Length: 84
Image (cartoon, rainbow, N blue to C red; front, side, top):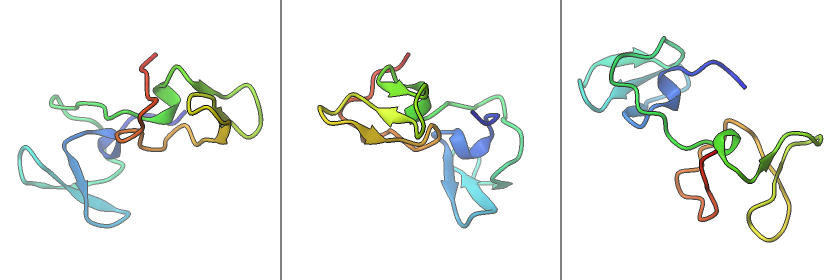
């Protein structure tokens, strides 16, 4: 897994691949800049109980059928997401 940064925060709104806006402060921030004190991690596949990275490629085993999964994929809308 990669180190957490602004792109992993609920408050981050991307503009392009390099930058985005903080929904709390309204300031422009670089996507890979370090987290701030208001960081709130959004759900990601790698944080889910159903995520299995023991196989290659990694798999999601929570939707009835096994799917390939990326640990950093946004899981905000996943009906099977269950935080570890």
